[in-house]
Length: 217
Image (cartoon, rainbow, N blue to C red):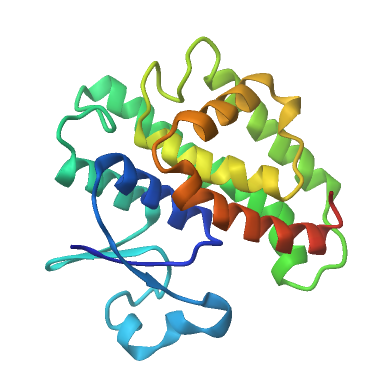
């Protein structure tokens, strides 16, 4: 059973949990409290010198970066390739969406909320919020014409994106401005395997913290 070092507040951590749940893979969960500095303990740094979560240890493989973990789990444990299609063009769409989440969508969310939540700034920057909505608008366009991020079936791109977008919603970001995103998020909540079990608690806890800092409802 792979060891999985994580913190529920972290949406990247939750994306890989959703992938594992979809695959029926049991993980040996090892909670790290980043606020308390657990990630800096020598025994964890020996596993991951970047001391970040999530981190997966599967036999002789130590792997971090959540999207790489999602891809590895699908490749290693998938009974078929539905979650991470082998067709090069379809896989490229899935990869693009995961890179979009990392480099644009979740990045812009962090640019908006993290200065207030973790760096002592008093108020969020409204220009950063509009940049986030611009990215959500792009996602809205990507979702046009099909139920899931990369087409008509759930892929690991949906696990990555929903962990992010549900976190945005919990922080008071108005997802309803983006009709396709709102409908997709509702679809994920009602039909995605393990959504309530492995995603919702962390979403709720993050939302409480974020709303208190950001002054959102």
